Length: 229
Image (tube, rainbow, N blue to C red):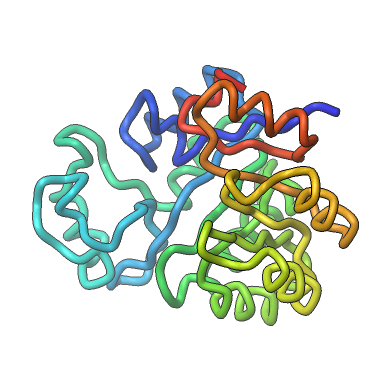
């Protein structure tokens, strides 16, 4: 079984995260897929960022959800990269690949579903390219209530329960569980797969950990260094 090589926030280990440049670099590395994070800005567009507070990555104070897209043009990630919209990314990726969209911000479900539907109808992207994940399970629940077709992945941190994720996944017709790799062993992998879910694990950067995930036969590995997979 070939494990999917998924670049974390593009290729975070090499180029500033959640930028078009980081995504393009991951594609040059030969990834099977990309994981990105989205928030909804004040003017309604979905934009790529892992944090609502922009200070850490841009050096400039601002809360993403309280700024318009025009405002965000004044912010540069690590002083050089624009903050892209989800639509920017989908338009600029020449050949569609597996795309994991993580809903980081609130009220992102409806707009995400609309963009996926629109691009699936009018471009070479199709529904099979997408999976939508989140730690905010209520946002995933909302997404599934308005979109019964796009794949859903239930994110699970080290402090969360695999069993609860499986039950939530069943209730909301999810296709995958996305656990922190430290939660995985033969027993947990078997439990997840026996319940009918794929496993996309994160964020696996160490070569020994990557090899162990391969040995466990997970379906995909999300890494800052996807070329190590």
